[in-house]
Image (cartoon, rainbow, N blue to C red):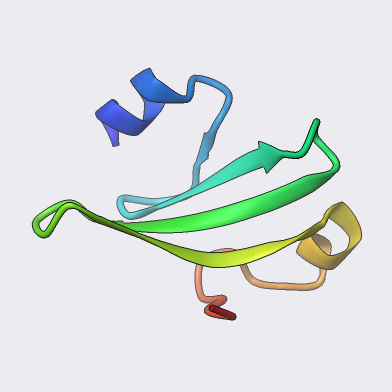
Length: 63
């Protein structure tokens, strides 16, 4: 996650594989799960702040 923190200093690191990003001028939140071994990022959630408040960021998998 050090590379994520370096590339996107405003991202909030949720655990060893997930991070939350503010997108669209801060109007939306995006949760991404990283598989560093394979070099893949999986978008797990994109939604408003109100929608984000209703999900579990560590387990959500909408996409």
